[in-house]
Image 1 (cartoon, rainbow, N blue to C red):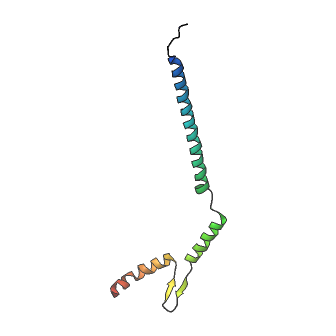
Image 2: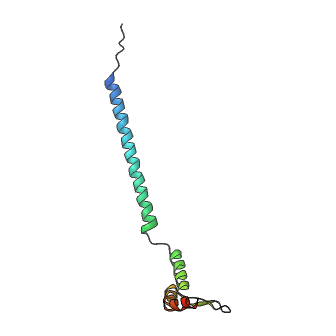
Image 3: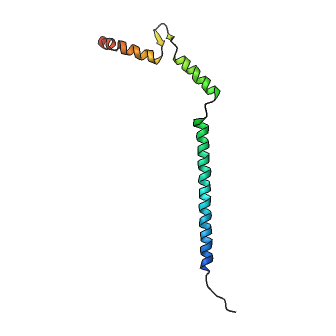
Length: 100
């Protein structure tokens, strides 16, 4: 019996094509999973409102920033809101510059 050394190229081509298609499907599936996870993280971090504790802390800080209070009475240091401070600087800006 004589054995043939013919290579079945169609079988090799079929295996290569199936392998390439399999890799392509896997890569596309991984991209879908990745972009779904990115979208879920965006919604969790950016879209949903912050927690109640965070909102309360921010509210306390905002209230503190908007209050007028003494920092050091002896030295005459006072804490005032920034918008009032800016108005005072504009009003007294020329006077303070002339004193130098």
